[in-house]
Image 1: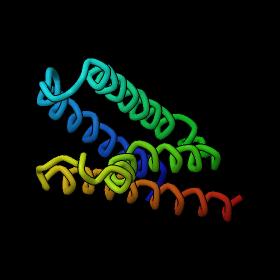
Image 2 (image 1 turned 180 degrees about the vertical axis):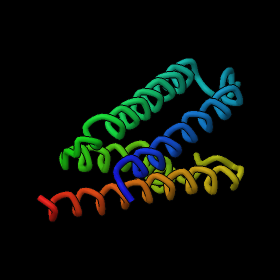
Image 3 (image 1 turned 60 degrees about the vertical axis):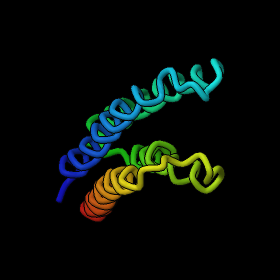
Image 4 (image 1 turned 30 degrees about the vertical axis):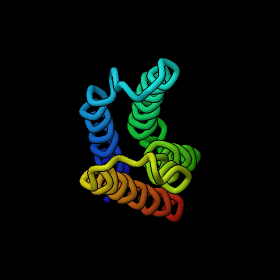
Length: 132
């Protein structure tokens, strides 16, 4: 396995996350129990997750391909934020979690795919270090 394969897994997870949030967004727009300020944060969080995932894809296909070990650590930090954010928020505010359990499985699947990509990247980077 090589860093291109790692980038493919990471890209798949990022696109899956973008599509998942795009699917969920319309169900929350205009939610009558949410204040205008909560609606503001809804759109803000969508912009943030979109930006995070675009940055992740750019790192996976840019610096990770060179290979630059620092890109792995940046991708790991972004993974914790972008993919782990749902689970961290669920621990902090369990009553606010989505009521549909399929969502946990869907984001868990994207998290697993991303983690596989990170594992492939780590192995490929370790192999390139030992070959040097």
